[in-house]
Image (cartoon, rainbow, N blue to C red; front, side, top):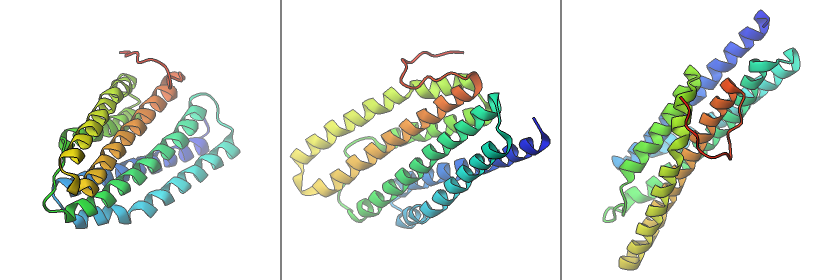
Amino acid sequence: MSKHLQRDIDLLKQKLMAMCNLVEKMLNKAVNSILESDEALAQEVIGQDSEVDAIEVDIEEECLKILALYQPVAIDLRFIIAAMKITSDLERVGDLTVNIAERAVFMISQKTASFPFDFHEMAQRVESMLDRSLEALVNLNVPLAYRVRSEDDIVDAMNREIYSKVKDEVQNNPETINYLLHALSIGRHLERVADHATNIAEDVIYLVDARIVRHQPEVFEE
């Protein structure tokens, strides 16, 4: 690898890590805005949406520049491809955290209603999945990536349980339907964040092992 290519890839990694850190903090703040009934925290997340979008465009342009200038091969090429896909997933996670924060603003105003499911448990698991998928990326840790991937079905099951509990609550307390629909949306948004964390983990596997495992059965590998 030429020193110029190495320099540009190192810069790209720095930008990607900055985006990872920003999106992870946004998700944490969106979750805490609900747990702490903190509207100001939710508004802070909403205000960061354009920042995530700008970083995504910057990283995409950097990837295209490297492809055009150096025509990288092997692991360098896989890194560029993975970086573009991971950036897209992170941008979607950013959008989803904004959606959660927007739902939070409404729900905080409904003083008498409460979640019909264990929001904290689901949020913790999803946050952990995103955190560990990014850790797998930083450390190129394939076993950790496989573990993240294996947890997606657990979050899917949680989301199905949420739907069932919200449906029962609507029947028992129809006057809180608007609140419950927002709660249902938050569950769905968290489930989608888990999907994107899984995508990132799968891209780490591709980056390191040159294996495409998306749409394949779960097979854990040490």
